[in-house]
Amino acid sequence: MDLSEIPSKIDELRRQIMSCASEGEKDGWHLVKQSESEQMKIYSKQSALFNGRMFKAECMIDGSPETCFRHCNPKPEGTRATWDSSIKDMEVIQRISKDQWPEVYILRTMSHGAAMGMISARDFVDLIVNVNNKEVVGTMGESVTLESCPPVSEYVRGFNHYCGVLCFRIEGEPNKTKLVYIVQADIGGQVPTSLVEMAIPSVIASFCSSLKKQVAKDP
Image (cartoon, rainbow, N blue to C red; front, side, top):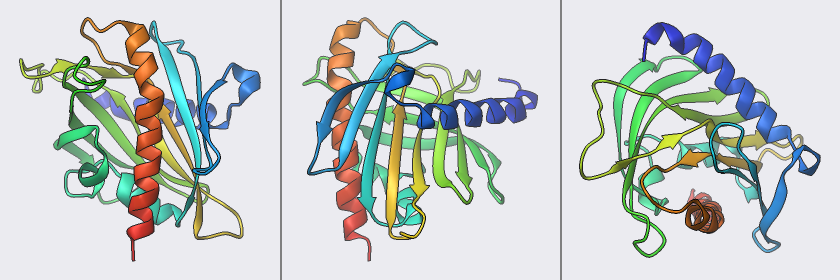
């Protein structure tokens, strides 16, 4: 990836993620899983970027957007890998901007296998953009190709089309957050698409439930 492309990539990533977050059933999203006790709904629709489906969760969390983001921020030095059961390890490949918003870096994420071992371990190399403004605190990402980080035999290299975790502020309720979690992953390999798409809603639900518990423990 040419670093000169990053500013335009950031602008496009923001546009796509914020547009996706605001969409509803009239835009083709179908409800595939919900939990009233968790105040969570998970939707799906066909991706326009690859031969698979994209998923979006909406969930209410008792905690400030800053607290939620602190725990879902994808950083090796953060708490994310301690509670997100899908993550095995993370490493920052390159820091592009760290002293101002948006914070931008390239991250390699290694995942555990899933679906009782039917989906083997994956890794992803993503351009990460963290944002903080009056509307939302969040992290957005999209996979990139780097010569300095080629695929390795221990992992199947996956590709994240635009995705993100957004912690929206709720007017008049500083200790409440509307979480929007967007997943659009082409996990690669030979796993049947039907198996992947069957597993993803449960993985997303587990993420939201675990994040709620982690935020509840925050002092």
